[in-house]
Length: 335
Image 1 (tube, rainbow, N blue to C red):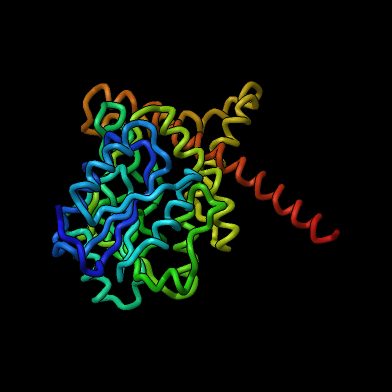
Image 2: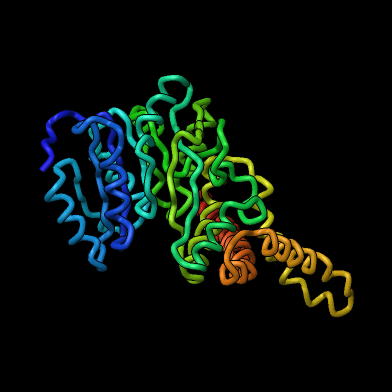
């Protein structure tokens, strides 16, 4: 068993629920970081897993005394993050996902960048998306393409510079004293909203390829649909709370869904089909130029529209939800 007596330099927080296939590799990659033993603690916040994750965590915890497991009875991500932050003892706090593995220099390079850039209160790295199945490999390809996810810099492996957010962010601890905790009403996009609070005050988020990670994508159509649906659903609420500017990439899926709903117009105006045809021509071009195997190439045909439609539908419902909430608040203010 590791002897863990020092106050840690870094606390790593991992929100987790039913990750038995990924959590061990994730934790091992963190334990293998190029930081001296005793300088890191790992706080896994488990959302009452029922797939064997809890038992696996108990075994890991019995071997490594710097692994701490706490329960998240509410089972939602921002609550897990806040529980972990309250537990953290480190000078720096890093939020890491259970569905990922991290380069051995992830934490040490993050510290080096922060020491070099005093204005950077959050550091991260572009993620490399990977899939374990043919479907997953196709999803990884889409999530690393501009046609798939727009100009989200943190999705592209070679990007370096300032950014809106970091996927697996490494923070100076004082950030949470200055800006508070994550918004627990935002089931998704809570990281977007938090980083927006940071950057709107003049603090910086910096991304470097030296801070490397591999993210394992969702491996079924239903999981992928729900992932992007919830991204879309909570994006308007996050943007409204943070008073952030809506970017083109946020609106394109919504416009696409609205266009699809209008396609019956093409019965009388055949030219209305032109954008639809162009869309699938672009998909076909991506299929042809990809170096994936044949099965994964064919999955691209459904994955692009699946991601765009699920996000667009979620965004549309998110706008309606935001309007409803504002109307309720307006009515309550009059009473």
